[in-house]
Length: 93
Image 1 (cartoon, one colour):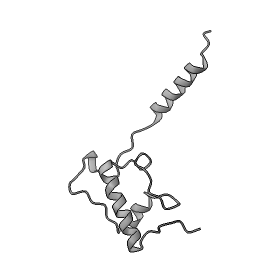
Image 2 (cartoon, rainbow, N blue to C red):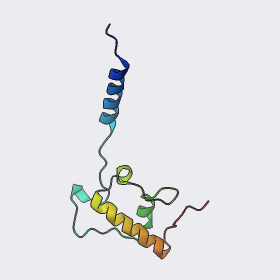
Image 3 (spheres, helix red, strand yellow):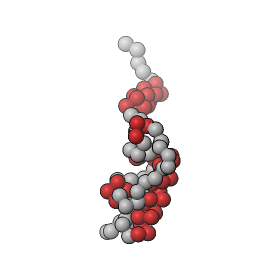
Image 4 (cartoon, one colour):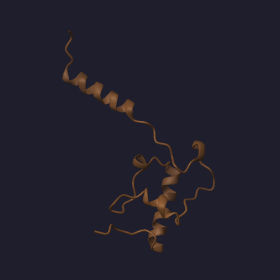
């Protein structure tokens, strides 16, 4: 029975972990196509709350799956909602 070295075992684990990951789809792009003009409604607090964490920070693209162009629009929408008082700047502890 052949023995597997620690380095080979590490490579196998990394490969398996990479295979398990599914590519996240942008929740704003219908059918994967970016429509023009790009706009995220700042009054849609329910959607915006899913894009910020418990401390009130904006989640990165790799966590939410939004495309780059929509991530910029999400950022401006969150900033507008905060300015209008719809979203908090910091968490309420």
